[in-house]
Length: 328
Image 1 (tube, one colour):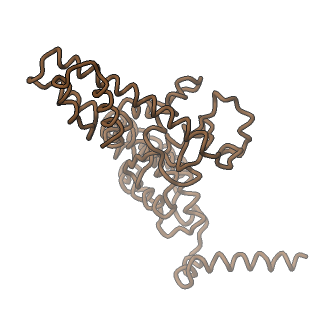
Image 2 (cartoon, one colour):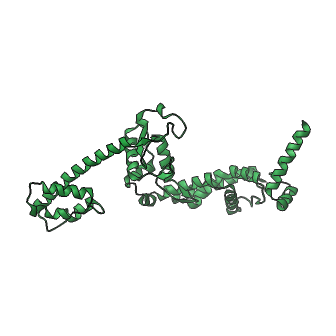
Image 3 (tube, rainbow, N blue to C red):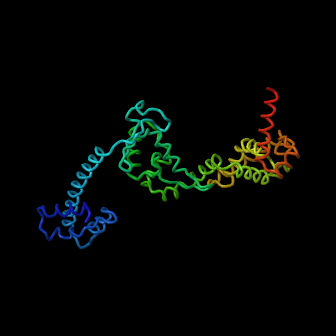
């Protein structure tokens, strides 16, 4: 028997109505949802008269009133019982005492009270919703950074209503998440095109250089006819790869959006932007991507093939140290 069922039966026993009219409410079940059960068992039940339905709704409302009173008392008791987690600073390591109470929120999580700056929580929330696996969206519930465990739905409601009372602008994705009752599956389904574009942006920021370098080579190969057969030599050393990735990353972002975005207008505009940008770039630097342009000699390549790229970096460090010693 749940708390609500127990309260409802006590309300029925002390009610002024005959037991015949209120007997069915003894079998009321609040699983899986008390409101769904009320609609199915009472409001949509053709065997009850309108007067009976009115009586049952009155009893249910009285039980709800007592239930919420007990819930409020329990929350006050928990709030006074639990202690604060030892975090006197925000996630930027600035003292929380510098900010007014309207810019902070207190959450009870795993029997501890945590104080967050609203902007910090909003950034955690937005990053969790735009999380990705490679080039695919993977939205998740925000995680408490102090214990590495996800927050629950009631935490998100507390923060969202606190944001409404503040002067901060709530991001559109968080507003959409709230309108979907914080259902992560529905959120991904409805907002997939936006999440896909966010996944591409995160992919370029987080992916390893080796993968991004191969993506750059693939991009140039895709446009090789339009670029007069320009190419990126795959034998580049690690330093040259980083320089190439840094230079080509804006073009690569447009290329990936043009190939993978769910918005047809975004695909068309991004593909044109990537192609036109690469054309202008290779017209100005026609030898870019070749070993000659980046100053990579055949002897270095032979050394890398025989000993590996790590060894050549160590030999360069040793030669530099020996040179500095001789100069001294």
